[in-house]
Image 1 (cartoon, helix red, strand yellow):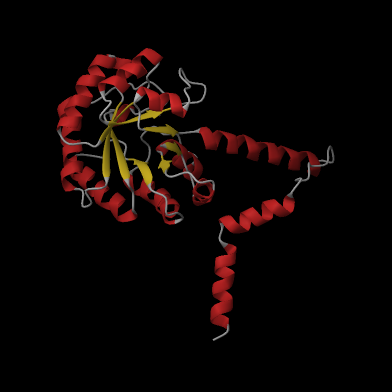
Image 2 (image 1 turned 135 degrees about the horizontal axis):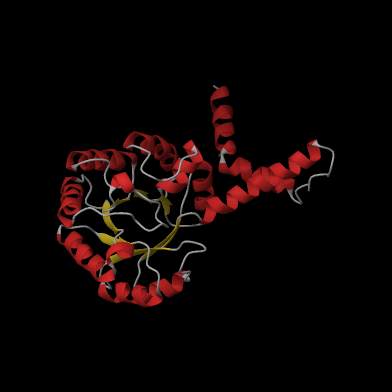
Length: 277
């Protein structure tokens, strides 16, 4: 399962249009797009919900969503699960990072909570979900701090409380990826590929290693950022009289794609239908 990250309703429509089967909602891209903030534990549950709700409503695709540390104690985890399930989230990722020292997924964690603390949260999420098809994924951030064997002990404990899958972040060698795949070959296991990071494997290679899903957290946003910056620089040069902008080779096709993505024909047909009454 190849899972690109969406950061607004428009990008999820493009993901859907191109035939992807699912998408991810991560704190890093959503917070950057909506608030211009880094993923350092600055956002609360309400801000994540505000950002995600419109994205989920814009598509029929299933999504896997970042649940951070559950935004508090076990009560907060249960509340988060209820809200996420009501929105239509298909899978929730809950991590063992210490919230006060939270780092983005591509950065080495500064600290992780005790196994029993995160296990209680994971058990609360599993046992109180209203839809048994809603997946609870345990994310382990201990690799850079404690090593892979410690991650295995943590993941085994998380699986013992009933989570549906595991996600060990920060793995820096193919050898360790192979160990994860072999160790959890019968478990739903997620990998994330960070462009410019220590590893960059093809989806087929990850599947051969035993991984079930791969997430690309910033792949789309980084390219969109550079494209927007490039377009604005062209406009700036044009405004200052220094250069003509490059006219799109198929501006008509681009406009038609835009109309399809915002579903303009659907709304126009509704207008015509009810105006005839």
